[in-house]
Amino acid sequence: MTDEVVRLAFRIGYLGDSFHGSQIQPDVKTVQGELISAFRQLNWLDSNQEGHNLVLSSRTDAGVNVRLNGGIVTIKRSLWEALTPRKMVRALDDHLSDEIAFLDVNEVDSDWNPRIAEYRVYRYRLEGIDSWKYPGDVFQEWLDLFVGTYDARNFARMEEGKNPIRKIYSCKPWLVGNRVVGFEIIGEAFLWNQVRRTAMALFKLSTGELTTQDISNAISSPLEPVDFGVAPPDWLVLWGVSWEKFQLPVEENNNFSFTEVPNDKAMERTMRNRWEHGARLEMKSMLYHEWSYLGRLPIVKHKN
Image 1 (cartoon, rainbow, N blue to C red):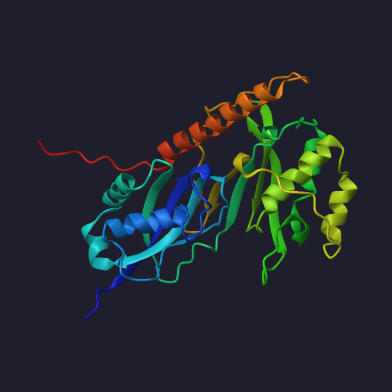
Image 2 (cartoon, one colour):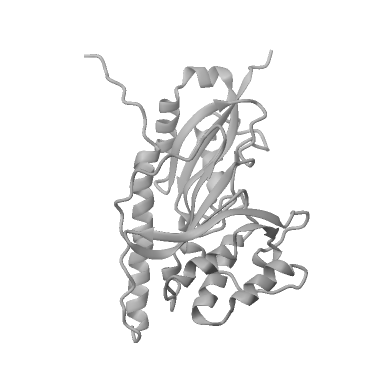
């Protein structure tokens, strides 16, 4: 008689520059690959089995940071009952590198699919792109261009068989303190590179390389291909994924700050590179502090 199995939903965060993307690939370090390896080291998955049943909700490219993503894995029920969510999180934390935060885990129905989410939230730090200048109040007008249900193929790297119709619920400035550092976009699901291509379009609006009419035409005439370019991955954060069963937590940690780009038109490249290095470290620090409250575990009082 085979042991009954149980389907578990988990949530994770990770630093994008430590991995060659989220999806498992041969001979390179990926988030999915590291998770499978940790589960197998703990004997929670069969090491002799060629396939695996650990799946992530949202795919991310190399360099893209993740505050909160999700996934599912199936293990034996007897093992799950012997563990607790606290024990599982702590055991995985001991087996995973510091660049992955395994935040929580819960039992779900056998048909629960992590890829069917209510919405996904991305944030992009536009000031990380050299020569970006905040344009003022017109910025919200630019962001409004990307809201709605439309064929987004001109803002994506299309994959065969993918439906290009995407529903974007909102797009607004990303404020840190009282300063606009980029934008936040919320949608049901996104095409490959969609947020990074949206970011590059916004950047080119700020430099005058594009007009709002160019953006409107790209959306209204999707069969007339245009390529506005792709923004760098390292300023992008998958801020969170929300499911009906697992809502995004209310944000509690708003105390972080980002250093403003020095206001010097003639800033030498070496100085700019140093600012960028510090800015990337700020984003990593922000993520670790976010994970510290997103991944809270119940406190167990030991008996004397």
